[in-house]
Amino acid sequence: MSKFDRFGLGLAKGLALTGKTLLSRPNITVQYPEQRLDVSRRLRGPELVWVALKCTGCATCAKSCPQGSIELATSQELVDNKYEVVEFLVDHGRCMFCGLCVEACPFDALYMGRGYERAAYRRGDLVLPKEKLQMSADRQPSAYCRPEMEAELPLQTLLVYGQTRAKR
Image 1: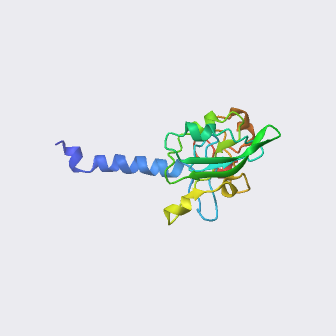
Image 2 (image 1 turned 180 degrees about the vertical axis):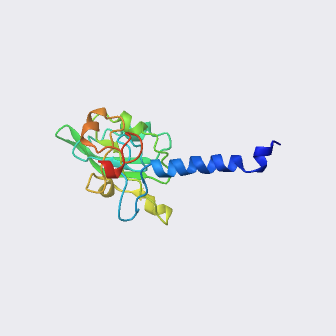
Image 3 (image 1 turned 90 degrees about the horizontal axis):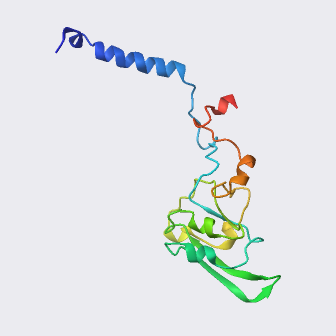
């Protein structure tokens, strides 16, 4: 043990580094319920977004799901070369959000969502029917597996682009 260690040189170095970091970095704290962060453009978030007008009822998404989280039922009659989707259920409690269903959809009818607040108190509330999966103001698609959509989405809030909310 050297004589400098006894006098707290290591402690002083650590405090100097902490002070330098504290004063040089911008504040990145947000007040959560009032302010929301913009997540990554290609987020594979804990939700799926379904576009009913593009869906043909081919069930490729359900076949590609390794967990079996997607259930799809269609009508027997073809209308405009599409089957009408009668039932479309996604069990978000079993889904591991791997994105294979999004990659397998040949008609771009299924997207990963950008939302990150999908908690529920009961497991049954995590099984969403087609009405709750459709694109809306609070269910926006991410650009995961769809790079052409990236230009339309906002930049991520923290650190990736070297910007913070205050600098934008």
